Amino acid sequence: MKLFNRHSQSSRQPTSSGQPLMNQFSSGMTPFFAPDFGLLTAPSDLLVGQWQPNIDVQYKDKEVIIRADMPGVKEEDLTLSLEDNILSIKGVREKQVSEDKENYRYFEHSYGEFFRSIELPQSIDSDNIKARYNNGVLEIKVPRIKSATQKAIPVVTD
Image (tube, rainbow, N blue to C red; front, side, top):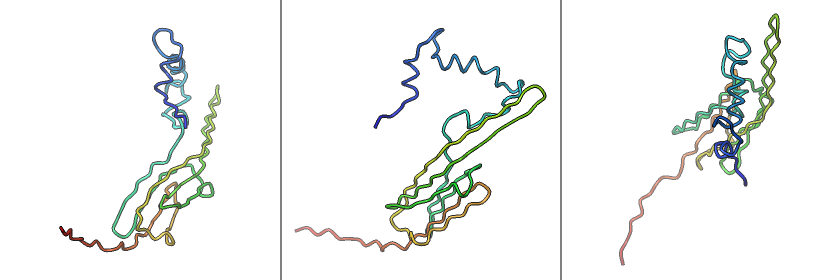
C-alpha cells in the first residue's frame, strides 16, 4: 500500500523565492479570500481537506457510549456495522455555501464520504446495540455483558 505524505511531496515541488509552488499560489490567493473582501468570513472545512466526524468514546461498567458529531449529514446517509468487535461508521456529507451580494455571487459545493472505526471490548452484547441520530449527533450505546470473573492461578514449583 502506498501512503501519501504531504510534507515529503512539498519538498520536491519547483520553487522560486525559496517557497514550494503551492505555498506561493496560496499566498497569492489569500487577498481574494480575506474577510474584508467578503467571500469567506470564517475558515471552512471545505477548503482544508477531507472531513471526518469528531468522536467521543466512553467506556463504562455497563455500556460503551459513542457520540459522533456529524453536522450536515442526513440520517439516511449513515451506515453502521459491527464485525469482529469493530464498529464501523460510514456516511456521506454534502455541504453547500452560497452568498449573493450586489456585485458578486459566491457558491461552494462539497461532497464526500467518510469512514470511522472503533474497536470495542470483547465483552459486549452485540444483539442489543442501539443507535440514535438527533440534530447532527449520532449516539450509539453498546451494552456490556458481565465478563467471566477473574481467578488467581497459583504457580507451583516442582
